[in-house]
Image (cartoon, rainbow, N blue to C red):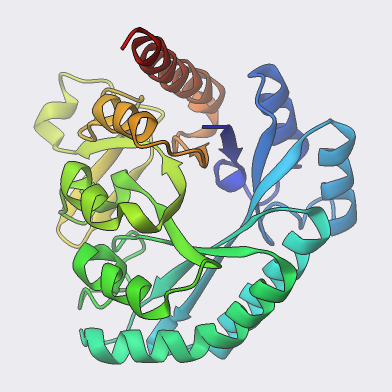
Length: 295
């Protein structure tokens, strides 16, 4: 299970050099590049030439695209297609996208609309040898009070993936996002969606309460809300996601895709958060490998 680190941790004004430096220091060979967030400062060509010159490879081109934004977005369709073209050029196997939202919950309408808007993107991905991965999400940005995003519900997400049924459209499984959406990430969501998982975002988090903040130092970690619930990101293994059990299960199930680390720490905490996450994941997977050899 190769590790990658995500450029979602960078501020829009930061150079890709920050991501490159961290990857090299942590002995990681892959980076996830957010377009256009990570390419605006240095420009598209210079960004990817810097990655290549550092001896790194691109695991995924991620975008904030949502084909179901406000009930259906052609503009986001264009962004997905741009990301596919970039992925083909830099030989990145994946393009990450999100689902979107509407002013009311209607899963049948949402799935039908998403499939229609995805189709030209999917054809482009197939021609380019690229796989689109859809990331499950919660209402992190406060735009979906109706809970219309089907990816917060594993059952509806499973229906979408079954209906599209393409090797070039897979799931970016984010266990912490499921937790923030009020869903048991493991074993429930994992067991239901396991046949579709080709990419994984790795972070940990827990419910936030002001009273608890007096006893626990949450400084340096980003906060998110899902309507009335507030969450705070945590070091790997210190949040509510059962990462140790999930990582061992991924190993035993033969998962060979990327584990892309995005701890969601503030800049002051970012390097330490990446270092801790890498050490934690490597420690658990190394133990799983050793136990596997003994069995």
